[in-house]
Length: 112
Image (cartoon, one colour):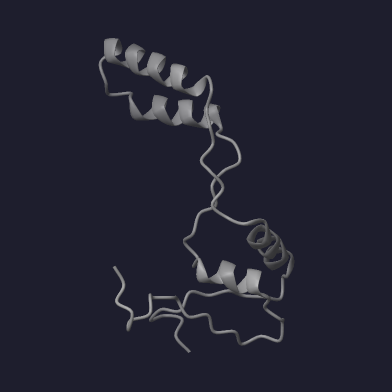
């Protein structure tokens, strides 16, 4: 619970460029650089491959059980709910198109 006198932590965005940052772009930057966008679909082939690689050391009887469980789950995979707004998605596309912009995480190595 946040005390009424203490503001919740909000990462600081320092804008040094000449490009105008609208609310969506600033919102996206506040999500930080390690934010991961939820996938639109689950790539079942990738999941199966990674599981096959991971269970090489398991006994063959257990491997077949695991394979069957994974196959059952992947028959109707549901992607996770969207965790980014349409405006944030648009802002991300605009950031990617702009090759003159550099976005850095401010830490000990990148501190100005």
